[in-house]
Length: 532
Image (cartoon, rainbow, N blue to C red):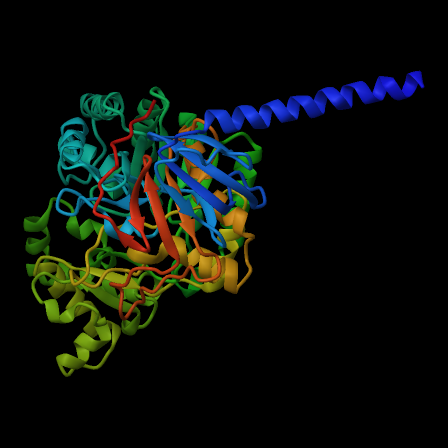
């Protein structure tokens, strides 16, 4: 009898404690501003969905549970049959059009509630005044920024293809430190692009250390993503190790048929570096095509010194021949994919009729054979006309799937803010996050739903040190997405990119409903978020 009482008393106390906890939760959640009921909550932590209500007061979540009071709630959203998750964080976003497109609808309607700008070495500079301009227009979602190496280098060295001297490097480090002091999350590089491609590893390490001194991260568009990919990964890992800075290999991929399957090696390199103590992660978009400027097909030495120097070299017969040979090599072995049909124009300001067409289409228009030589001549013409942007269909689905399932991979769009009818963008601008949920979770069953959401929410939030975003819990920022796991789907395609996704029904930004019934409400509730 004594033994029975010894065990009954704690149970009774526990039951009483649970009763009071439930009653306390109900009391604390009366009269909230917004209450989401009957949904399946995926809280961002890679745990299975559970039935729970979510209570929001102001811009914060005040409760997630099963005994949330409905009394006095100013608004109730019934999420029956739907998933309720944290808003998605996009670690690689091209936000350059933000001041003209403040609603940021192409991101917002994907469920993105935070986007990190300044990738690939390109950012506003100086950063502080620009962020003030963003605050003035009231963005549709939350935004943060990296400071771009290319812009820092350009500010000090212009387009010179040489290493900085000690004074110039000190000036570059000061520019990085200044941006970090203004709230940048870290340093980005685009070592494939101008003028960053003219830098050596010591320069990048020095600037990464400047960012690390302020608690920043380092995101790297690798120097090479096709031939030379392994060296590009190795360089980024060396920078992370020596600068003692957290690293993201951004939009990780293996470009060109010669490199298909090499993600087995690159992921092994990342895993080995992590085990050795380098804090490195990866982000990825879920498509088999890249997107960048047409100049990526031109050897970088030809562009040194800027446009005037490039034009001068083209006028020299011997140099022009060398430039052409470099373009032909890249068409055959790198971004060109060995086929002019794999190069699809997305934005051509000097000839809009080329947008959506391929380099092969352009040769046909000129009554030319679709040979690498003729393609190279048109690439040169495009650059001399002012350049263009293109989609390069040069990735392998096997690599996409392999990279996506790696435990250290996050989802990010690399998408540019877009509006219907403007150019012919990569479909990732409209469809990245719903594509993962619809195609790779529901259709291919490559990932569990909770894991995919984790890769879009808590993982990127942690990478940025944002402890109150990317999760649904008491005290977190009220950035929330309600979606239908059975219907969520990207609709943007490579032929018809200007299409919003379906199945993303409600998006809440800082406690305010920004998407309702799958349509933007025109509420711009975003903020500029800075490194803490």
